[in-house]
Length: 228
Image (tube, rainbow, N blue to C red; front, side, top):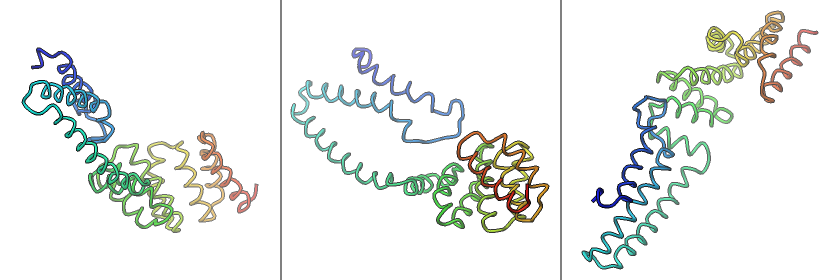
């Protein structure tokens, strides 16, 4: 059938071609994702349409049957869309569903933890520590250490926070957030000279407006506590 129908052959082959880049032939960080099917679904839709036309023209079923099937599919998919929209309500519902689907994903645990960091820091801390147990990539690991340091500093658990900050700075001594959080820890301990040193390292690494704002806030805090 594929040999005789070039358009159907195109639909089938293009479906698999579109999936090739994300098929883990070359391993990458994300095993499954909805957006992997965005392009392949066009090929699948073309295949279904061609198949429906062929069946309709064959006389095997009533010519109106494909229309009834299509109408039923639209209703079913519409209901499923309404249900799925609950998952997409906000970031927390999205990442809760994601984490439930792939509980061994460090990225899912990190992003779900992010949604709890401001409102339920203890829950966020549990998720961040869980993500660390799942052998995250270096990039995700840095983010986890950063998030944990912030929570622990807010809880005034400076020794525990220093463990995460020190590991970040060990790998990158010029890391902005590593030096900024280190400055906060030194200020909390009333260690003015080390605080000046780490802030001096943090300021040149501030690139984004939020980072510049944070470094200025810490600088004002340092000046108030330790003087110029």
